[in-house]
Length: 427
Image (cartoon, rainbow, N blue to C red; front, side):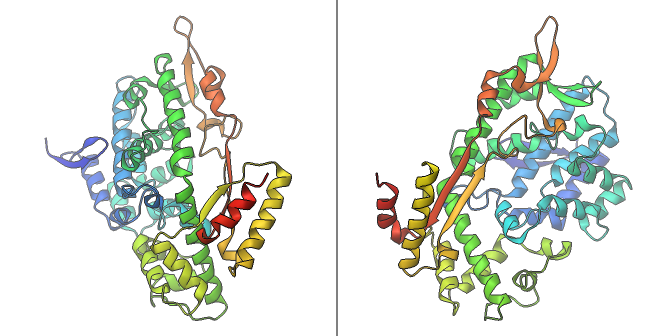
């Protein structure tokens, strides 16, 4: 058997057969310009400010998602009919689901107002991208089938759920990978038992987990819950994101006001500073290095705010963060006083004072109420007379995770920590 081997920190060996048409297709997709770009996009964005080993990329995660999808399909095919065309589409979708990510993964999306999935779909359908041409050469229908899986309107739904659902190969890989690379142990769960327990409810076209696997899914959902609370919502990571947002907003505002802001001419950054939307080609030209290069130049900017924020970001002189876990009235009074303290110290509160909110979002935590039916997790309850039910209906542990969690924090320059701490701890 001819094969291509990728050594992986999580799965050890990811093996692709290269003596089959499908295997050759996947290797060609991995070698495309668009997929190789993912080596230059950090999987966890700015998490390396909090966890210094979190340097892994969207490239390694995407290979991991493909590997898990391949294993899940192999398990399901022992019992259910899955056509070659369906299998190819699902494996390609798992590999390419993140191909449209922007620099620093999710953090740039909120600043520039785009969603990576739209760029992923456009890249897959385009006749001008290498990934689009490679897939179209394999099958005229393949690009649309892959795009449909990522969009969420592919039929069969059960197969699309392997790539995108509340229990999918994407989440299964990134929990284990991010846990390993950060050194945090919260993301470990029983992957093998989940794969062993996955089934297809053919009557309702959906995945479900056999009764023996319910505890493994509880474990997985708890791992996801704690990874968001302890890693993805880490104070230092969120502080780094706040500084990055502030400096990019400052650069945008200065440029659009006709002020001098350095940029590499002939690159998409000129359009970004001008507030224009990037087209697909321009978007795929950008990666983490482009953003970092511009921030390095802005350290010498004429504008003191832009220069200061750029220096803080590059040298990890980040904002301090306090949780606003206090009664509403006290919180509003504290915020007003803290903002005044920032302004009285000579800082522009538009850039040096920020509230950080996140939580109670269906993507972050599994909640039945906020999730589309196709994204619910179904499990088999009982052995003698088994019934397929939504997991929170049968699991007290999962119901406990749905009580909701929010973060509401305030970010400010570290120089002001003693003064703001006095306001914060005042009885």
